[in-house]
Amino acid sequence: MKKAEWVTGNKMRFESLHKEFNRQTNYIGTGNVIANTQVSGFIRGRLDNGHNLMSDRAGHYPPGELQEHDLRPFNVPEQIKDWIRHNITGKESVILYKFFYYVGETQKPIGYVVTTPKGKLLRKWSALLTAKAMSALELAIEYITE
Image (tube, rainbow, N blue to C red; front, side, top):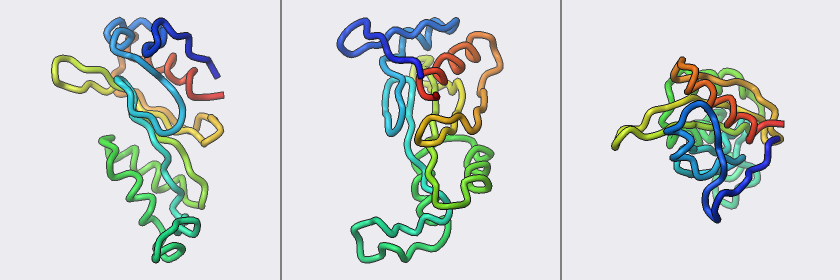
């Protein structure tokens, strides 16, 4: 896993072919992250029933309910959510990453990645099939995978 090199106290060095993504990126990291060009979070497996939750309903959630709860805030294409629903079927969690940049007020996705909590790459999707965008996505993957 590539380690961040800090240019300032709140901006890491990121040097892909995509100059605008590079300029906007302040941090790329693993786990639950909300940064300038990344949103990511843990998605529970389909069979996780909340056994470890501190609530009256702990252990009583039907299959898929907590996974759907985790997917809800992610603004990602339905095909990515479907892939998670059909492939993350046990109790294991994964991390879903969305990488993007802004053109004015409009968010432009670069791509999406799913890894294990230990950083094994499970799947990636490119949102833009340009050399610049693919360069940015591939470099971002180096910071989140083993």
